[in-house]
Image (cartoon, rainbow over all chains, first blue to last red; front, side):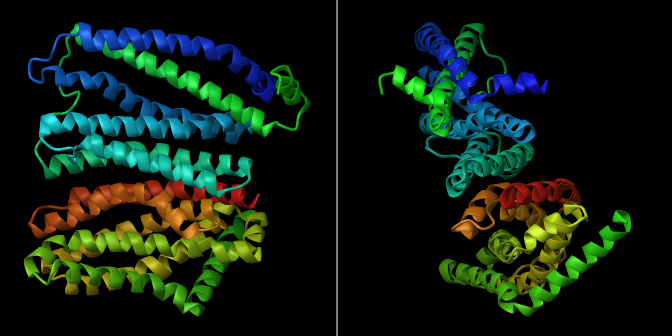
Amino acid sequence: MYAWITKYASPRYAYNLACRLTPWFAWSAALLFIAGLYGGLVYAPPDYQQGDGFRIIYVHVPAAWMSLFTYMVMAGAGAAGLIWKTKVSDAVARNCAPLGAAFTFLALCTGSLWGKPMWGTYWVWDARLTSELILLFLYLGYMALQSAIEEKRTAARAGAVLALVGVVNIPIIHYSVIWWNTLHQGPTITLTGAPTMATSMLIPLLIMTLAYMCYFGAVLLVRVRVDILAQERNSTWVREVVAEAGG
Amino acid sequence: MKGTAAPVAFLALLRRDLVLGLRYLADLSNPLLLFLIVITLFPLSLGPDKNLLQSLAPAIIWVAAVLASSLSLDAVFRSDYEDGSLEQILLSPSPALVLVGAKILAHWLLSGAPLILFALLAGVFLYLPKAAILPLVLTLLLGTPVLSLVGAVAGALTVGLRGSALLQTLIILPLYIPLLIFATAAINHAVQGQAIAGELYFLGALLVLALTLAPLAVASSLRIRVG
């Protein structure tokens, strides 16, 4: 088991694997985005209540799902880094944070844009929006900790502990915010509030979610490759790679 | 040997931290002073309207308590980190969990417990109704240990870093949100004459969870930071 991990998690092997996988993820993301956006913006019928305004969910809902998914990947990679002390999982964890923060920010922006015509205001203390805002703070706190610790290895391990504390806390925060929300104001229309979604609306949403996943994979792989090259810049194989690229 | 040494070490470290804390009274009193000043800012900026202050009092007191507690956490590990005794604590044969527990308990006794007394004074300043005073004390009794426990994780992660006080406040404040929600809800419900057992149970659950997991996270964070 340990030999298997050290083989696959060696920076050089991971770099080569990432190089080979990147185009697959990037092309699937591009094709799925085209299919999902066409399906969402053209093919899906307008909503009987919200008209065409509901179509923002094809950007918003996958972004909100990805914001949580990315946190889980970050914490999982951080835990792997703590357990097996692999450099590659540290690189994965720290490169998840800016991506997750971006997804969270996108979910917040699209949520508030959707809120303007639906609620008549850009911001409502809706449970989901509030949870997303807190999640953004968690990501920014993680990134602040990463930039404060100079030594990368220590920074990654400290970040892993913080991410794991966050994983324990996220469900508690989420449900306490929902409880707080129902206490203070009546239920509002939520973005995914429709009890059942027509299949013609649901399929583009699923395609968009897959597209986001592939996009996340592609960007993460590129970022991890750059990170590995920067970390291993003094090793022979990196010099060979750079020389091959004509650098 | 280890089994008998752990309680002794726990008490010794607790005693040492209490003695040190009582000698540097500024470390002890500054967060409390901050708490009172923040409380004072609210009537000055909102106006001395009794009804308004009364309705905002639970929120103001709890937000001020959270701020005061998180700013006092920077001192928990800092001096031990700087003079090297933190390394000795981690190297000692007693389990790090026990020693970390002693340090957190000392922090709570020096910062959390006096805060409860000051919160009573803040309650007078903000015209908190009589019915809300006991719930305020109960929420603080259950909540301030959570502030110390969870905050110690951030204190351990940022010990010795430049600008650590601000950084650990940034990291820790979002994690305090559930506590804040249930504590203020309990006091508000008490003012309205409703039952508050549910909120208190929830605060108790948060305390048990923090008591179980936080020392683990603090011990491993300290090992990472000290190396």
